[in-house]
Image 1 (tube, rainbow, N blue to C red):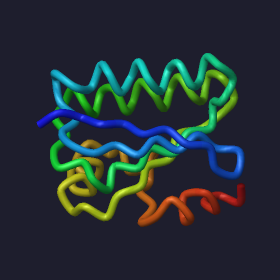
Image 2 (image 1 turned 45 degrees about the horizontal axis):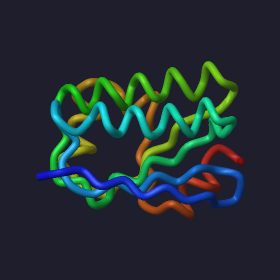
Image 3 (image 1 turned 90 degrees about the vertical axis):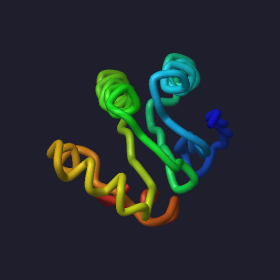
Image 4 (image 1 turned 180 degrees about the horizontal axis):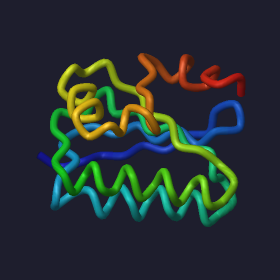
Length: 114
Protein backbone atom coordinates (compact mmCIF):
# COMPACT_ATOMS: atom_id res chain seq x y z
CA UNK A 1 0.00 0.00 0.00
CA UNK A 2 1.20 3.50 -0.79
CA UNK A 3 1.84 6.23 1.77
CA UNK A 4 0.00 9.53 1.62
CA UNK A 5 1.23 12.46 3.73
CA UNK A 6 -0.82 15.61 4.24
CA UNK A 7 0.91 18.59 5.83
CA UNK A 8 -0.75 21.33 7.87
CA UNK A 9 0.26 24.00 10.38
CA UNK A 10 -1.27 24.01 13.84
CA UNK A 11 -0.37 26.09 16.90
CA UNK A 12 3.22 26.60 15.72
CA UNK A 13 3.74 22.96 14.76
CA UNK A 14 3.84 21.27 11.38
CA UNK A 15 1.39 18.37 11.46
CA UNK A 16 2.11 15.55 9.02
CA UNK A 17 -0.84 13.17 8.76
CA UNK A 18 0.25 9.90 7.16
CA UNK A 19 -1.88 7.05 5.88
CA UNK A 20 -0.93 3.74 4.31
CA UNK A 21 2.23 1.73 4.93
CA UNK A 22 5.55 3.14 6.14
CA UNK A 23 8.07 0.72 4.69
CA UNK A 24 11.18 0.32 2.56
CA UNK A 25 9.42 1.75 -0.47
CA UNK A 26 7.53 4.65 1.11
CA UNK A 27 9.70 5.76 4.05
CA UNK A 28 12.14 7.80 1.92
CA UNK A 29 9.23 9.91 0.66
CA UNK A 30 8.14 10.67 4.23
CA UNK A 31 11.70 11.60 5.16
CA UNK A 32 11.98 13.90 2.16
CA UNK A 33 8.75 15.73 2.94
CA UNK A 34 9.51 16.25 6.63
CA UNK A 35 13.12 17.28 6.00
CA UNK A 36 11.85 19.94 3.58
CA UNK A 37 9.57 21.28 6.32
CA UNK A 38 12.41 21.35 8.87
CA UNK A 39 14.93 22.95 6.50
CA UNK A 40 12.32 25.57 5.58
CA UNK A 41 12.34 26.69 9.22
CA UNK A 42 9.72 24.57 11.00
CA UNK A 43 11.59 22.10 13.25
CA UNK A 44 8.56 21.32 15.44
CA UNK A 45 6.74 18.40 13.82
CA UNK A 46 3.88 16.18 14.88
CA UNK A 47 3.76 12.95 12.90
CA UNK A 48 0.23 11.56 12.99
CA UNK A 49 0.48 7.82 12.28
CA UNK A 50 -3.09 6.98 13.26
CA UNK A 51 -3.93 5.86 9.71
CA UNK A 52 -0.65 4.00 9.11
CA UNK A 53 -1.30 0.28 8.89
CA UNK A 54 2.27 -1.03 8.87
CA UNK A 55 5.73 0.21 9.89
CA UNK A 56 8.86 -1.80 9.08
CA UNK A 57 12.45 -1.30 10.24
CA UNK A 58 13.13 1.21 7.46
CA UNK A 59 10.13 3.24 8.58
CA UNK A 60 11.38 3.16 12.17
CA UNK A 61 14.80 4.26 11.00
CA UNK A 62 13.29 7.21 9.18
CA UNK A 63 11.32 8.20 12.28
CA UNK A 64 14.51 8.12 14.39
CA UNK A 65 16.33 10.15 11.74
CA UNK A 66 13.53 12.71 11.74
CA UNK A 67 13.73 12.97 15.53
CA UNK A 68 17.45 13.71 15.27
CA UNK A 69 16.89 16.19 12.42
CA UNK A 70 14.17 18.15 14.24
CA UNK A 71 16.16 18.29 17.49
CA UNK A 72 19.35 19.36 15.70
CA UNK A 73 17.36 22.31 14.36
CA UNK A 74 16.07 23.27 17.82
CA UNK A 75 12.71 21.54 17.50
CA UNK A 76 11.09 18.23 18.35
CA UNK A 77 9.20 15.33 16.83
CA UNK A 78 6.05 13.96 18.42
CA UNK A 79 4.09 10.90 17.35
CA UNK A 80 0.35 10.31 17.34
CA UNK A 81 -1.14 6.82 17.21
CA UNK A 82 -3.37 4.55 19.23
CA UNK A 83 -2.38 1.46 17.24
CA UNK A 84 -1.17 -1.33 19.51
CA UNK A 85 1.29 -2.67 16.92
CA UNK A 86 3.19 0.60 16.70
CA UNK A 87 3.20 0.96 20.48
CA UNK A 88 4.64 -2.57 20.83
CA UNK A 89 7.40 -1.90 18.29
CA UNK A 90 8.37 1.34 20.05
CA UNK A 91 8.44 -0.45 23.41
CA UNK A 92 10.47 -3.42 22.09
CA UNK A 93 13.08 -1.09 20.61
CA UNK A 94 12.98 1.27 23.64
CA UNK A 95 12.09 4.12 21.28
CA UNK A 96 9.06 4.85 23.44
CA UNK A 97 11.50 6.54 25.84
CA UNK A 98 12.44 9.15 23.23
CA UNK A 99 9.18 9.14 21.27
CA UNK A 100 6.14 8.67 23.48
CA UNK A 101 2.88 8.21 21.60
CA UNK A 102 0.04 10.67 22.02
CA UNK A 103 -3.51 9.51 21.31
CA UNK A 104 -4.48 12.67 19.41
CA UNK A 105 -2.84 15.66 17.76
CA UNK A 106 -4.35 17.81 20.53
CA UNK A 107 -2.61 15.68 23.16
CA UNK A 108 0.69 15.94 21.26
CA UNK A 109 0.33 19.72 21.13
CA UNK A 110 0.04 19.96 24.92
CA UNK A 111 2.68 17.30 25.68
CA UNK A 112 5.62 18.44 27.83
CA UNK A 113 4.15 21.83 28.48
CA UNK A 114 4.50 23.32 25.05
